[in-house]
Amino acid sequence: MTIKIVTSKYKKEITDVTSLHLKTIDGDITILPNHYPLVTAIDISEVKIKKGKEVIEAFASNGLMNVR
Image (cartoon, rainbow, N blue to C red; front, side):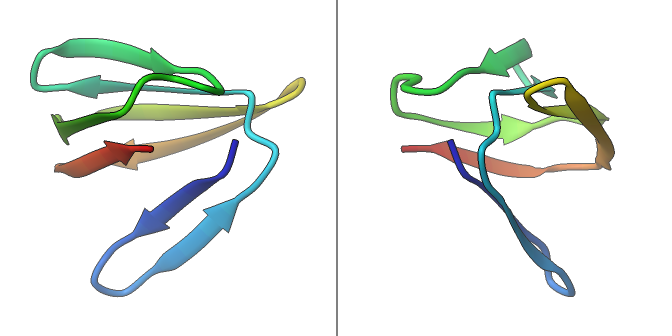
């Protein structure tokens, strides 16, 4: 799957992602390829993006997530 990260000053596209884990206002969530469509608010949390065996760690302070 492909993840697009967009902020007011930054835009990045990460391809071949196998999973995405972060915290939403409803709790922790892991997104896998072919996940059902979802729009939710992101809570302050650590974000883990997995590409095969590689793990990319980031931080989210707030925002929205749109899964298509």
